[in-house]
Image 1 (cartoon, rainbow, N blue to C red):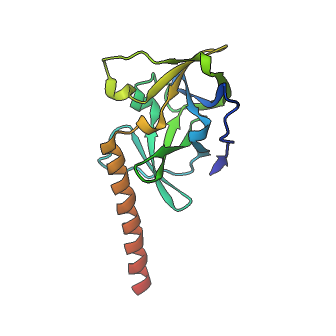
Image 2 (cartoon, rainbow, N blue to C red; image 1 turned 60 degrees about the horizontal axis):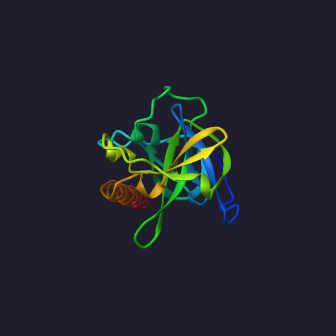
Length: 184
């Protein structure tokens, strides 16, 4: 599994850095401070009965991480399975701790610096509001608009609860299987 770590510092008091990536044909950005790393997963475990936008789970550093198909979650136009697809591991604040989710994206592009004055509130939309809650703002750049994602809003509270249960159940299953193997 290839990994890439990024500096999480802000560029200056007047600008912020965003990791930009494509979801289908649309360009999105995530604050660099929310990015833990970018990986190219070797294998992913699909979970029967999971929501359609949950591609499965992967294990990174002994932690089971749910992988969200971000283009599917936000309703982006898909171009099929891209050769350069990867997973952005994003830090998500929880009540008493930080959690990590994986965001399956079409292609990672680059880190851009955006001046505070070039960031605008995203317009509210009525249709598909559950899919667009994660849109935090829009950034105007020389390349056009970038939709800025709020990682903490990608999964609903119920989806986080289900992911936490899944992580716990998988960990218990691994421990139970290890115990059974050890006693046999």
